[in-house]
Image (cartoon, rainbow over all chains, first blue to last red; front, side):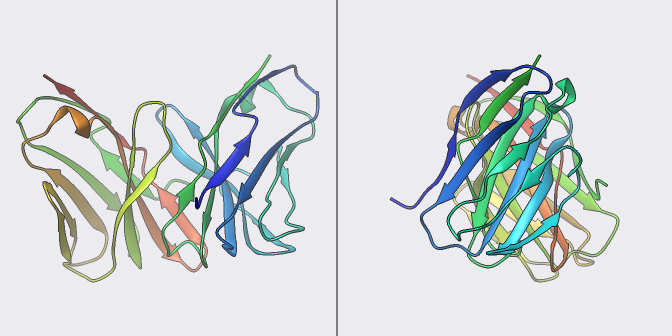
Length: 113
Length: 110
């Protein structure tokens, strides 16, 4: 089944404790991205990757890192999480860019205390 | 920053009534996509509009792209409880810029 998977689905952590949210897609998509969703703000892009070893900042990249060592995986790293990073995070992929259908993962709900 | 505005933020309708959500961009869009997110779920692609003035239909859903390619609308005829969710537009302004609207949360009262 074609899908985007994220882990963990739920996470409670404390300020400053490094964490990684994994994202994997099995559709051989070149393009992957991360969004955060907050009430009243919709979906805001954090980082995106056009292909392996190619990443770029989205609208709200501060406090986040990403890597794209393999085509299928695009982990989101919070080196030192802060409470303002409490949010619902979605990973998405598409065949070749933002002009094509975005396939979203199930989401990761993060609470930073 | 945010370049695609979407209204209304919330809409409550009686089952059977129509519903419309609107998206407006300050800049010309190369294309616009629409997504639906069910409560507790993730956004799911509905449709993409590319041409100026384009109108597409999916059963009770009608999507329009403005002549100037700066606005778009989604209209649902005779809403059903299965239509509940948040509807997002997403406008592309360049090769790597896709901006999501803030979404319209639709509640359908049986």
